[in-house]
Image 1 (cartoon, rainbow, N blue to C red):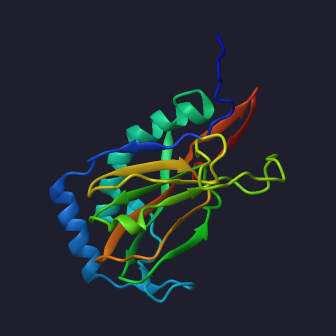
Image 2: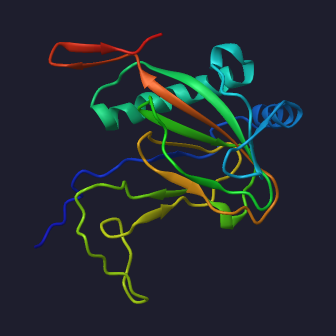
Image 3: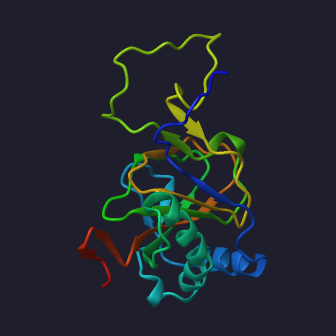
Length: 207
């Protein structure tokens, strides 16, 4: 019997309802009452200043909740249970009509998103196949072609609910289409392991 192997897949971890409702409510209130700045590419997308969880109580609580999941996700990436640090966090307030341009995150290994409010189905987070890979130069996209993990160019995250966490490798490109619903609030972060060791050659990332 034929066997199909998933060679070199890219992991993405979804943790439903991870945040406590009280923490969600407190975070949303703080974000809406805080100082924000406009995104450079969308005049309907706003962010708080990038901050270390050590300097923000709400961010610190979220980072602590994400900690065990980062360890689990790190096993998928590096094959060992490493110590992880959330090095920076920020909020995203996507107003009606706004969108988030295609981007990836630099200077980190794992990135994550906490969803704090319900999102309109039209603005689910979209992940794209990494550019510059070793794919064929030709594509076969027709109305009858079935899209799957081996030929699709993008992955649309299923509907995220308040409190959900999504973790993904920081190099993975992602975007958010135009928001056709109410204000959408998320908290994003980047994380690094304390160190990586390749047969005795150790690189430390601890601040």
